[in-house]
Image (cartoon, one colour):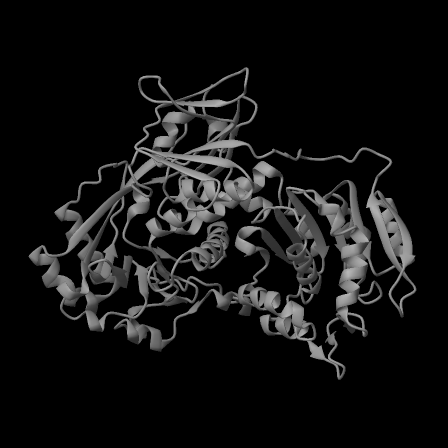
Length: 623
């Protein structure tokens, strides 16, 4: 449930939990600009930088973020990317976010964009994206100290915000400020409205050099400082600061296009090579796919990862694709055919923005009743045409597509440090400072190590509504559980339905098979008996069409993202093994790859990112 906020007679938001105002009684706009933005030397300090990273303790109602975003938009010398990482233990509602900005008309258009993405804020990291991916907000929902331990980046500036130390002492405690210090580099500037003696002492103990500055009336003083410890801080990991140059991405499906787009937004010149003549020639060429988060009673690692991935894909779909034509967030009804509820008994209110127990009306629309077993309703789920998403990603500036290019081998020039991509005859196809392998199960042939990737063949069945009797009775949303059923997807020939798909391990063939058509009908009979009864004559007559492709999976069914081996093969990276969840994982993995490469804030918690490490299987490979 969203944090309860009271609004005082003068319009000031007030927290009953902490017994404190969210902002000065004189208004928060001046405080944001003078105390935080200018207190950290902005916008001057970020001029002409490739990116700028700000850490904020206490998102509150988002005013500091909106003011910083506004300053970025207005600055011709702004950095290419602006990142703001903000912690918040008790997030407000989307409506209160917008209401808080209502007193500042110049901020309302930005606040409306923030409001539109301010949903489903379960504990963890939520990446919100604005300005075509050039303004990134990572909302870390949870205790500040715990959430900062799940991040790995160096801030250029820190907004120390939050309720008064007297009201919320834990936010200003030594252990919290140590977590902040771990995210700082020498020279990181900090600013705050509080000058409490205990806060000054704790900051000094953490390595900050702080001083008082004139404050905004009625406050006499504010705090400014810089991270400059007299000792050498211990760092568990080093931070990369790679300058964007040239990159070759091998693979023109979802994984490759997403990685290429993420790098191009950061200034890389990217060539995308693929053996097919056109983008999405492999498994990403299926007519339409289901976008839905995974659910589990214990909210497993896979469940949390897929929520992050679904959010990332929805953001790109909304920005790049045409709703109703290329994608549709129609919702997904998931039948729990194993008899489990899927969701925890104490599933929080914020989680219902994502998923909930399906009510009888949803079941009825699918021709089902409660006695057919438990089901979940996924509000943010739907369908997407993967090929259209791939094409849109590859159309961004800084990218060059080259189809019909069959890469067979890689070799690194020890003198230049560049990688060469060679064909089967040893002829050079391309060269660059960096290579990203996103070629599905074919990636294992290019790594030069024992990479356990598995091909998984899948066949879908589909037909036009005009060729099907009874299409008007289809459910008005996607249904999945035993395979899936997508009821209505626009195609050049008219509206179509899709059902499937088969799942055959260690098979790469894309030839369609009549046996798989029969198997898809059998799945549909389990999933949607009434729909299957309607479509059975079409399957039996052979009028239902088929599409087949080979997906790629790892042994643990999670993607592989990141550097292969920076010591032995510097500049060789992976983004592959999306399995049957390419629509859920590809965009997220592209952003995770870019974040790892540039030492940026991560789009997911550190432990989730580590679960996708590209080298997790190579480490166990025999020498």
